[in-house]
Image: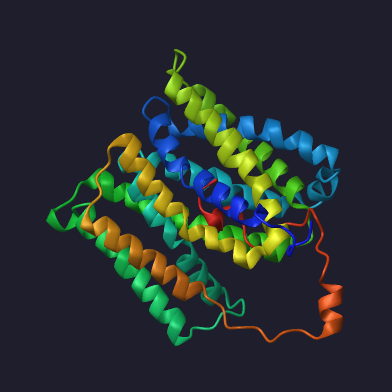
Length: 326
């Protein structure tokens, strides 16, 4: 199906991914009530790998990925193992809506990292303004909504630091993807990364597993995270990128936090304060400003003809982490 003939396909993909990647924070909050972070990460990656691996094998995309296993392992570490573990730890002390709002700053961190690594990103006045606005939004959320200005809670402050680690990891992941393996098939990269993550967290995950079977809400949350927010979400992402391209797909970043806030307020009775609303607007607005690119002159007809067909299984220029939690 061509991009021009997609009809409702693109809006439906956007809406589906916006919801799917806005609810993981809610599910993580439910799961960490009974599971240790390492156990949650292991269960989530193991189940998701069991779904994605057969898909990758059917497409014969595993072998080329294994030939370049070093960057794939690095990608698995910074996109899955480390951020998912830190995210689970942080949500022991923070609300799911607050977590979702802070992670809306991933595009800002991505721009800063691109500037540091000199990947071609230039510090324009618009980029600088976006970074500043995003930081003000984060400061408002942490200082007012979390109560740090009044002394705060040390456990919550540590959780905020852990979320900062998640943001940095999610911003580094796309750099690893684009620099080290832009030509590798996406389904193979994701499948191998999930298998590697499951193996890396198997020992601590099993050792810290509860002695009794978790409650039904926790089991359903883990299955939802693995099957819907990881496996299904990646498949939808590939379809969306094929329709609109990787750049326009990043617009999902600005929908996920709103879903996270609504889900937290409606399901978990989390607070919705003026600082939450204002901080959300500033963080998302800063992300839009900082990550917005200058208009690119239209290519000539020959270039358009050459670029009219995209490989169906190539990795997107941005990763799922850049679009929100999976």
